[in-house]
Length: 209
Image: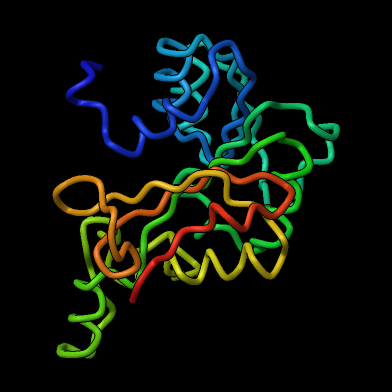
């Protein structure tokens, strides 16, 4: 994948992940992100996925993938088994986000999370003026087809981390036209966070409304 075709979200993840590290991708899909990390950062990647067809495609790319439901935890992995645990477009789809978050932070030294921002101005506009469940570039499904179970905003997630004393080491926000540096809760379609176990209050971003 040429660099100019790499999504901004993936570029941020590439910046955060150290060369030669170990990565566990929860909800790895067909292994697109793992493949990119393996090529660009020489990571040793593993995945967990619930979709059997996606697992076959991921295994065909050379990755070890387990067919499991991450809502049940990660009992087969010891503490700090991986340098990074990734939940990209996965966290909002799980039934038990607290369980998944605790397990991700236990198994990984750092955790990377990316999710669609339900408070994007497009979603607000559609809810207010149309009175219907919104559809945006980061929320492309109709209400009856969406895999998302939790519709959180960037501000919601930051507050969630603060209450649980989870540290936000880095954050990156993507809007319709590129990176969003101001008022991400209003203008970002997607939020990305690099988390650590201990609270790092000085780096917690201001989101705006």
